[in-house]
Image (tube, rainbow, N blue to C red; front, side, top):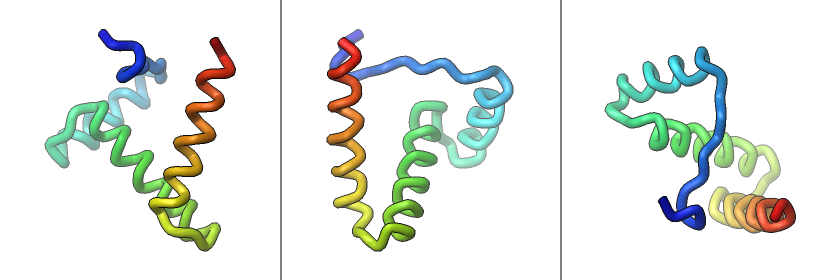
Length: 72
């Protein structure tokens, strides 16, 4: 697995079960369901901060990448 493209995260079993059930209703796997939840939350926060969702996601992505690099 390419560690530059994919990351693993640990979530508790109950949360995983909920994500699986939510994904089943929308025909999504757990990874796609988590991506949808993150996208929805980012859009909500962008609206709250009065910025476009695209620019807010770009800011979060840059911040997240810098945090990931700092851990190495």
